Amino acid sequence: MRKEAIAKVLFVVPAALAIVFLFGYPVVKNAVMSFQDYGLRTFFTGRADWIGLDNYVTVMNENVFGKAVLNTALFTVGSIVGQFVIGMLLALFFKKNFPLNGVLRALFLLPWLLPLIVGSAAWRAILEQDSGIVNVMLRNLGIIDTPIPWLTSPDVALIAVILVNIWLGIPFNLTLLYSGLQDIPDELYEAGALDGANGWKAFWYITWPQLRAVVSITLMLGVIYTLKVLDIILGLTKGGPADATQTIALQSYQHSFVQFKFGQGAALSNILIVISLVFAVVYLRVNRRRIDE
Amino acid sequence: MVKQRLRTAIAIVLLALMLFPVYWMLNISLLPNGGTLPESLFPSNPTLDGYVTAIHDQGQNLVTSLLVASGTVVVTLVIAAPAAYALAQFRFRWINWGLLTILICQMIPGIVIANALYTLFESIGLLNSIPGLIIANTANAIPFGILIMRSFMMSIPSSIVEAARVDGAGLMRSFVSIVMPISRNSLITVGLFAFLFAWSDFLFALTMSTKGQITPVTLGIFTYLGVNVSQWNAVMATAMLASIPAIILLVIAQRYIAAGATGGAVK
Image (cartoon, rainbow over all chains, first blue to last red; front, side):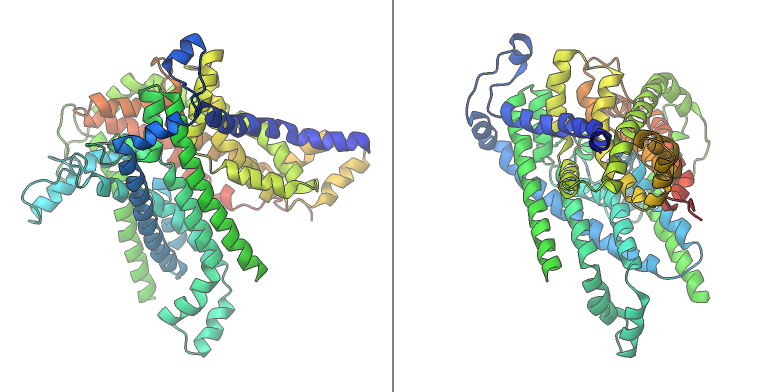
């Protein structure tokens, strides 16, 4: 019996070690580094002096910090609203019966499965200022006279990046919301129809309340994934022009891997972890209350 | 019936809009060398010039990505499969805490892991190496793999394993000879996604290769975009080549994602 218990634990030991090494160690290491003068010099001399909260004070006092926080908020909210609304409309549409439904719905997943840098590359070509197809079409249709500098003007770059991220996120929202819709029993709609609940009424009084758990998990995962997005912004604008698309995650990357100020990069990534955790805790509390009800 | 056909037509139009960027990538990849971005919707004189340049410039990078992704699959399955089975069947008291930990791990931003692993790998010589990239990439795949395989393995009737145990098979042997074969579909699903995660990875590729010796194809595309945008055909040809695993997954793996775990093992 004793031996059996040990054998059982051995099944989880490799995974537990991997999780400690791949997640526990980085979180602790980031926390430690964020209080140290950890920079290029550290790699040569091994020295990293304790400097208290200096890294946090430094990064938060930089001009770009406020902009990065605002952009992170706009990027996250804009992306989530767009992805969710379009994903929901598509999920409702695919709930209906029609030929080829399954195949067409599966093909919608393709943008999600592509490497993000591939998606970014495609959009770089599409949004190219002089000969990108978007500007060419808008000009041919007579909507614009001068080409829009989608990715090179501080006024529109953030909007362009959000639009691309919405495109990338639609499949994820569609998939989760569609599977949520499939789990709503048909009898509810049949009973509703007897009481005159069709169309909008059926959506508002049956679909939406039944879907609330799926909606909240979709939104929470969406927020957490969007907060940490790096690939798309690096691929499209690298944070520019004039910091118009800087975010907290990108700032962390640039402090660590462009300026080699790992202490400051760690401070920024810790700020990001705290924001993510706040959303996770809010989500867990909201859901627990619902289970208790 | 007319209404249903109309819906199919609408769905096709929506899908065409959604997949336009992918089509556009293909269109540009077929341009001749030195061509400007196309203004017509269909390639007028399609050539494979872009692909020739892409394979010349990025062939080695595609191989690097293949090695990193394959290694990630192996490490992920070896580590995640036994844990998934244990969490599905062994009734540990702390299971809920374990699952919560895994969920939280999935929320940790990649940049946190990159910051820490970079400093560690720098001191132990794993920067600019395929094993280093494999280790970093398992961070994306192991928590996902455990959760997916666990949900499949929950539905394995314990009677199958118990029957083997009565015949004298140890825990590990019954796991390898019984649980693994009936969980084949979930192993394939996780393996395919682990491959795709590692193949698509850009953050670790960007941060862990500092000397340009080990360049996964995602980093290759990024470098192309920086200096070489005059050669759109080669950039997009590389992007198309880098999309092949995603397309294969979509075509082949659909059935694995949907397939049940036990596949009728108990009849």
